[in-house]
Length: 289
Image 1 (cartoon, rainbow, N blue to C red):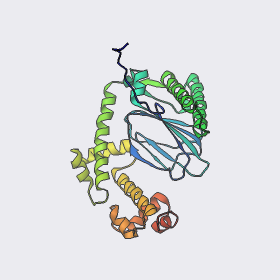
Image 2: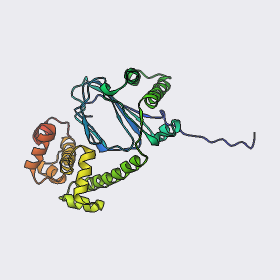
Image 3: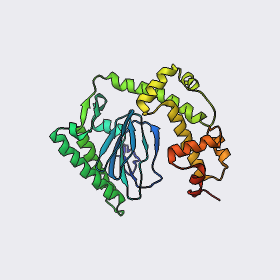
Image 4: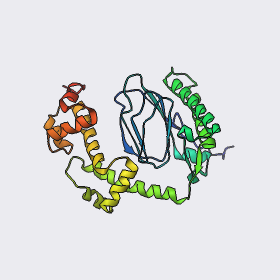
């Protein structure tokens, strides 16, 4: 026994990420992607725009959406009232790969309900029950068994997805193609996030990605659910909104800091994205005095 070696492994509290959304400020998630498998469950209220791989979904209570690995997605206008409630589960890809080593050859497909088999419809309702239980436990009182209960239920969700909602990829090159497209989009988004406060052209973005401008614009629109120009306007608007609600900078400074030509164009973006002028947003915020 003296020669035995023991490895101490540090584990997180849970093997996956569970997030409850019930804050009105938690209404937008910019376009992004990750390796994890993401599950979204609308319990109360609706999500106006959940864009997955360029497809715009509007959810209703009880609806489940799934985001496969490396698929670009975003959320706009998720929370409307204090009574709205949504759940997000993120299954790390290594975890899914560990329990189902052939996952690279498949993808998940959940709906719509009208296209599911009777067996799948029954399992869809089973998923709704499991996700509701997860939400109730997550929002409930702390207990010594809370994490193990959440873990067991989450594994049951994953088991149901793997057994009843997997479809084979048409060819193994599809995932590789998705990764290539994702790489191009990542480069474009990185450029925008570094330079949004400066003037730049679409051609400059394309040049930084070593792509033809027309090709970049096409794959961006197909995968992001909006044009490249629309994304830039929305991203600048989000950044300006954050500055309006967290600082006392002048409207002119906010406009200049976020790539707008002036207060007029800033106000136009605020009205288009948030339904309020810069002054109305500032007056309704808790920005420091």
